Amino acid sequence: EVQLVESGGGLVKPGRSLRLSCTAAGFTFSDYALSWFRQAPGKGLEWVSFIRTKAYGGTTEYAASVKGRFSISRDDSKSIAYLQMNSLKTEDTAVYYCTRDHEGAANYYYYMDVWGKGTTVTVSS
Amino acid sequence: DIVMTQSPATLSVSPGERATLSCRASQSVSSNLAWYQQKPGQAPRLLIHGASTRATGIPARFSGSGSGTEFTLTISSLQSEDFAVYYCQHYNNWPPFTFGPGTKVDIK
Image 1 (spheres, chains in turn red, cyan):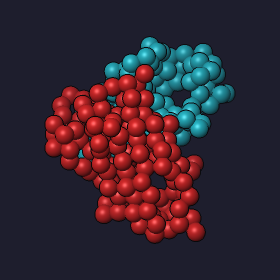
Image 2: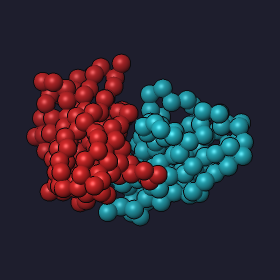
Image 3: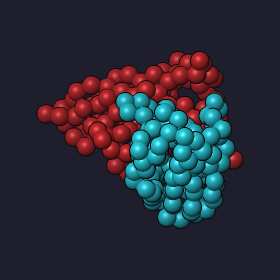
């Protein structure tokens, strides 16, 4: 079964760090780009970060709201993606989802075909 | 950034009726548009990609149409399990990927 399982969420004070993990199963992890999204309580969906496959350089992209504070990475040997979150702010409080990103019509176009169940991050003093 | 809007914010529909949800992009996204369904306490689920292609395992009562800036998700005959929030998302000129604010489909 194709699945993604997030872990590493929790309660953390503002200014501190947290690392989220996304463990994949049921597909060839190295063949897929991956993203992190988040959803604040009662709010809509927000894209956070994206990482390409090694075949496309493993390059990364970030939302403006997290650029310089968050870092995405992947370990294809373990089928795990990570989101390192530093200098956390109260507004980072959300459920964080990782996604498998499927190439659309060309390698620039990706849609999110598999979502994990999410892990909750609460930033509060 | 491309701004996505959705209408209506809430749609009240009786089981068995047709539901039509709209999504608009602030600039053309070609056909690079996806629809997701989210139920309370659950992760989003991909319904449609490429504006009109149903994802694997999605029932035929879900259909998508449109291109450019105007898109529609139609649920031909609402089942009890279809009451949820529906989001559209573009993946054309990114980053960032952006979503609409969602349409909540609830029971009339």
